[in-house]
Figure 1 (cartoon, rainbow, N blue to C red):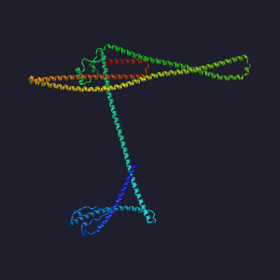
Figure 2: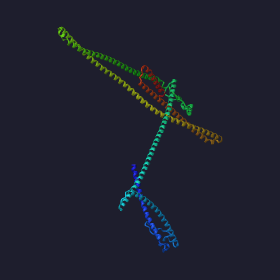
Figure 3: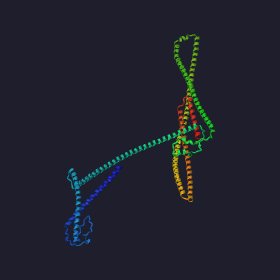
Figure 4: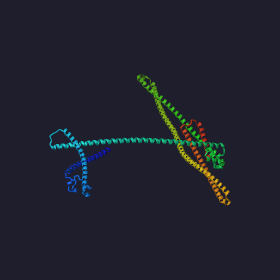
Amino acid sequence: MQNDALIQRLKGELQEAAEAGIAECRAAEDLRKRNDDLQSELVECKLSPPLSTLSTSSEWRWPTRSSGVKARGSITSSEGGVAGPLRKQHLAAQFDADMDEYIRENEELKEKVTTLEKANRELEKVTAEINENQPRSPQSPAGSAKVGLQVQHVARNIARDRAEEELKREVEIEKCEVAALQQSLEKFKREAAFELQKARAEVEEERAAKERDIRKTEQAREKEVQWLHNELDAAKLRYIARGVPRQSPGPSEVPAFGKPEKMASILIEEPASLADELGHFVWPAEEDSNLEAEISELREELQMMEQFHAAETESSHRAKEELAKTEVALRTEIQEVQGLRRALEAQRGAEVKTEKIKPSEEAETAEKPAKAEKVEPREKTKDAKNATAQDASDKKGLKATKDVSKDAKGMESKNDAIKKEALEMAKQELQGALKEKQEEITSLKRAADHRAAEQAQELAAYANSAKLRERHLVERMEHFESLAQTSHQEAKVQSRAEAKVQSQESPLQLQPLKTEVAELKLWKEEELAKQRSEARRLGSERAEAEKLKAQAAALFDEADQERQELQRMRALSLQEPSSPSKAKPADSEMLRTLAALRYIDAHLYP
């Protein structure tokens, strides 16, 4: 499509160039005619009489040309109003200027004519060469004119071929330019792809760096949480070691913000442990009577859990014993079936031997027919009886062997069916138990993951709220300190002013000042009361933040316990304990620790 459009455009340009050439030829023809006219006018001017012989200068007119020269109104014309000898001088000057102009135009026309004549001579040379190459034959004037026309046609074809070659060259140049543009475009695309890949690599590096930073922050947060856990464990152990009555925590008689050393530590922001932060809580002695009942309930729960675990172990042992019994029975049945097979094979071998012996006996009887005829009738009867008895015994043996083989086959099929059923039942039971354990593990895993995600979100929210509250607390304390300093300075200034006034003025004049001082004291007391209320509120917010931290630590403890329980269940599902006597103490110890942790959570943080 691009090449076709380019060719069409070039064709249009060629047509325009041809039209321009035709117009130039016409203009050259007009110039030649004008040159001829100018030459004829010049001859007429040379042959015309002088200006002095004319009667009046107004009678002289420049001869008209075929191309037409516009009349110019000048000071030399009759309308100019110039009279006397000056008019002749002006006419002579105008004539000289017009002559110079016409001479210059004539020279230009001559140059154009010479170029055209040169082109005509070249064309005549070409035609002469063509005529010389052609065989000469006597022709008439019409034939010679025809040959001239043919030569002109050939010359036009040559010129057209040259123009076509030039156009082809231009087309090739355009094609080369298009190819260069395509190459530059491909190069630009490659550079853009490289830049895009580089930018992507930089983005990936930035993302990896951000991920590393996030991991570092998460590790730092985990370390901080672990430190909180350790502090909480230490506090729990301290409270357990004291042996004091443990009940629901409540505020002490002296609040945290009432203690000067506590307030100073909060203002200075000294790093205090969680146990020190919880030191202002006092355990009231109201729920001491419930401790024994709760301990008994925990013991009952522990006993029930141990009984349940023992029942599970007993049921698993019973199932294993039943499987062992079924395996022993199957083995005995297999041995019996193998013995029956051996007996059947021995009987079949005996039958084959008897079948081989019978033909030899028949041959012997056939060889001795005379002896058989000479036997006495008693011997014949005995032989007949023996033969009948032997046939009957043989038939009975065959029937017995057939019955034994049938019984053996039936026993084999029954034993195979029983074995298959037992194996399938055991396999189904094991698969069902395994599926149940897998489902329990998956459910526990999902619950643990969900709980861990929720706990992480809650912990993040708690941490953000705690940070915001701490920041607000610091800002408020700074504000209060600045207010306290300003109020102290104002009080000093007021006291000095009062002293000066008392020393200088009379009591009547001091009365309004005393009222102002009293008002200022009231305002100061109100401000101090406000500051104390703000300090109390900030202390309560600090206590709430510590409670939130404790709750977050408890949530993390629960998540760790669930994770450990899940790992234990996975370990139990992967490898069962070899002996229940070894596994039982560990499970009971784990249950005891769980009960102790539950007891601590219930009584330390109900």
